[in-house]
Length: 225
Length: 233
Figure (spheres, each protein chain N blue to C red):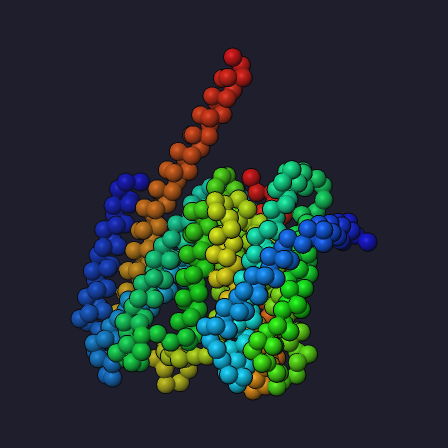
């Protein structure tokens, strides 16, 4: 196994272990997304037919906000005890750090989605008319789109004033096509009116393009002086 | 340096005046839209100028990452600022034109939405530069600029699949498209004038940014010198 792969796995394992012991990010995200779901239902109060049309938007906006909570914390523990500085001077490839971190965030956000998806189904009386297995494809591609760029931008905003505010300001504009793909894809599947194929392709292209850019630029960002 | 700047500024002024005459007087009045169509001579050149600025920003950002030359960074920040200004002009003249012609201020069509997203991306880029602290700002901003630029075509395609109302490209859109030769000349004069004007703004802003960089450098050197002094003492 290559050095990058070994290091990626050990980074990922370390993040998962730390999260498993503290459950800080998971608890915060879970509660946050739950609050968003409840507040949305107060502000819309939709019928079953309407809710099928707007659910795609509601679900993804809730998960997007929840993801910001986790992504903002993603690099915080590397700052304590100068872990990030130690990594910088070590010969380990920078991309292993990035991939490990991004995969870790992907796991956390996927867990949140799995836990909260049933809740959305109950709150909004959802029933998919199109093939429901496609929702999994949209969710996986969409979550990766948020997480890859989110992890990268969180690393960028580490070195700014008021970094917690900075992350959404950077991530939201660039993520607009991915969000559009997630929302439209989900709506297409739930209403069964059109094929989500186009949106799945869009997410695929977005993922490939931006994952490549992240991997190309992460080393530069990590070692920026 | 001073005299070449003065000559350039005078040429730009002359171009702007002549383009104003071309757009307001020389160009024929459009048949269905009437006088309101003359906003075309400001709307379209602003959009093209803004795109040129963002292309320059992209090239300067890559150059900075490769060469680490602070001049490239100064160009990146100035072109982004001027690009945002011209995009703002596009976003203001657009609704002013749309209201009498389409009957609505705004619609979520591919090009309008893409322009809005473009504006959002570069405003977030400028905000990042503003909030960023320390020496790495230039490097991090260059990385961000690359993300932003690559995103634009993806945004455009995604929103095109979503919906569309803006007229198809009028100028080279196949059979039946095309504009009067005199409108062409007014458009091109205005385009030249706007690009020259953007160049003028970039020039002024670039000098300012270079001065700021040099002052920062001097402060850093002085701080270094003073610590050395305390060490030897």
